[in-house]
Image 1 (cartoon, rainbow, N blue to C red):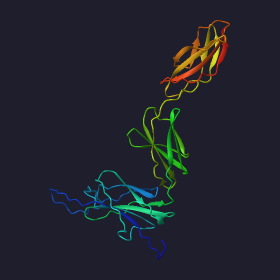
Image 2 (cartoon, helix red, strand yellow; image 1 turned 90 degrees about the vertical axis):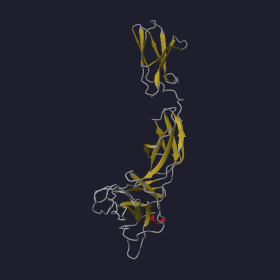
Image 3 (cartoon, one colour; image 1 turned 120 degrees about the vertical axis):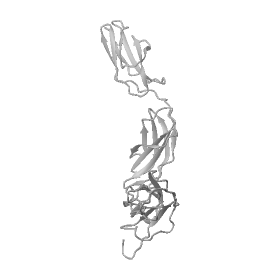
Length: 326
């Protein structure tokens, strides 16, 4: 910090009422009840705010159970040390401190316009029931930039064996979140493009999708508005490929590539004799092979294969293969 220039830190106060408790037992030496130092402070830029997260202490510096936390103080300011001046900044924002032992505590801090384009340092400390504060936590340095734009116009559309997501945005990277039914959203995937194909979605299940833009150095956008969809299975399996027909003794052997759809059921086989119409000779066999014993030597046979799924959708027929029985 340049000499002669004072940057007042912005302070956020989490306050709770000091609660008393009765204790009956042997006399004990007075304790200071200073909370242990918080060591897991993390911070990210989230839209036009900074999100901080840390774990409340449950022990005193003497290793004893901490009965109460009087307040938690989060400070943000310019380096190298914004935490030794001005006990309280104007506009401190109070909010609740949960019961001890409840795990991570997270809060949002509005970004001061003077922070944009600069680095800020954040720290947190807890004050015990006797008004004694812990040491400052680990220091977190954060580069503040113009907020990332929230992904816009998120759409979820039915696709073959998947849900197709598209949205508008110019971020270098995105996170995709998905919730099934009434469950909480969980991160599903990441992508560099403003689109994603969710091949793990199942038909007839209700899903909600959200997208968040991200950038290096701990910068995130607001999460997009949700897009909901219940995928429908309206697509037929892929057309079987690689069909071959080989004449053997009083038989013709057929083989082709196996389908890989999750809802695949089987194959239908169609045959034409001496240029006549195609007729289905086999219905829904699971294996990609078949031996046709109902043939006569010298006759010309043509074959085609289609695939069907569990809901009865049938693919187009494969390219025809022709062979003369021996």
